[in-house]
Length: 585
Image 1 (spheres, rainbow, N blue to C red):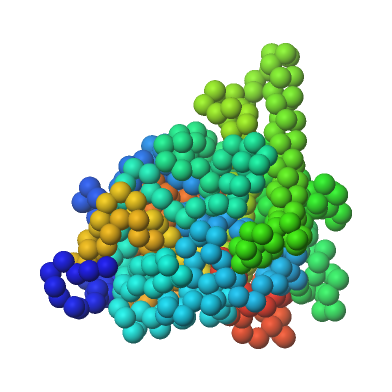
Image 2 (image 1 turned 135 degrees about the vertical axis):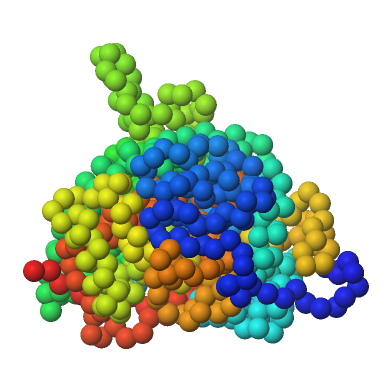
């Protein structure tokens, strides 16, 4: 990395949260936060609260100009997005697809058996043995504070190294904006070599996380249909609302087993099951029984396999290849993926039989997601079977983690919880919320947005600059450079967010008039790699949270104490989050 003008100054983070840039004055209901797209109109990439359709997350050329009407009401968001990786929100472009697992007794993720997470399998994350000074080991329990210290020392951009791989860390919103606006047609994130090896051995098609280049763009374009547009995402409100009563019943069942009669142990694990049930309901068009008293054997085997696969992967990535024949991890990895693929393929085959039966009977096929993909002719059955396991892997992170963190923060901030409750009952005093109801709850959306700022699901992810050199703050950075996008550092920067470690949802309300740099917090990514499932994830969280707060007052378990975030590729809690759910009178 060399400086083009010969100056030795570091790239400063000059963003002060009030520099006259178009403000992100999103109030959770109108979506009118500005955007910094490359068309020069100053509109923000994270206008998740939808009303005027101006968020870039659904764009098709990397400029962020497609509408963000996430309240599903006005139909103004075009389906122009032809690229992305189909991962769930906030895991848009740089993670390794390692979705959570409930087999850990604490945070809903895969068992934490590794002691260093020295992941060098191509995901661009710094291992625990990295002495290059980047502080980005996934096994550090600071959640991202090590990177904050690096920014204080070096500024908003610094280089680090893992082995012979040199990387550039981006921790300033103006630099992030400049980088993402210069992406090519096919933005490249880290390779998924282990996953690809399984697909190649078994003859499976690549999915949205493993495919690259033009094939990836074609796949993403097909997967976007019935998913990206807010008006289409709104169609999933009914099946999601059918699952939420089961979540409430599960909370009542679990708390009844506690000594106090109020405490739910390991809320993250419960929210994982809820999110898993929800995503399967959306993409497979079926319920799989995650919230039943007795989970079906095949469903439990499927869930367990995800944890075994992730645990095995974390070990394989640190071992030389020759150990595969002598140690059990590679075999477990392959077997787990086989179970995952077989489960998904069986659900897809059942849907094909259902479609064939409807055709014979002359019945309407409907327009749900899987039915649409299987009947529109854009993808083969093999391609659909290759895509869905990866969508499942990514489709749980945002909702399960974010709902856990938001309930934790509301429990610790009873005044904010009370304000939210009053807003909810003023809009839906006696009925199940619809998408139009959600659009009338700005504080609800601000609460979710503030939670994603404090706890970005993926605290850091990556880009690989393949096509040409790039200039950032007068530094010429050569092609083939791996960039690390430090989202946790960006969203907890005092220059962008005063009192950055406090839970202050009102900072996002338009009525507050607070300006934020549009790239200071982008939990759903930006451009063609923006999150495929963002609209559905937001809808799921808003519907669930509004009904939970209407039903329960949430308090911390008396023995809980302070909970810290830690980086396990995704941001999780350092111990189980146990909360009390008290019936409202």
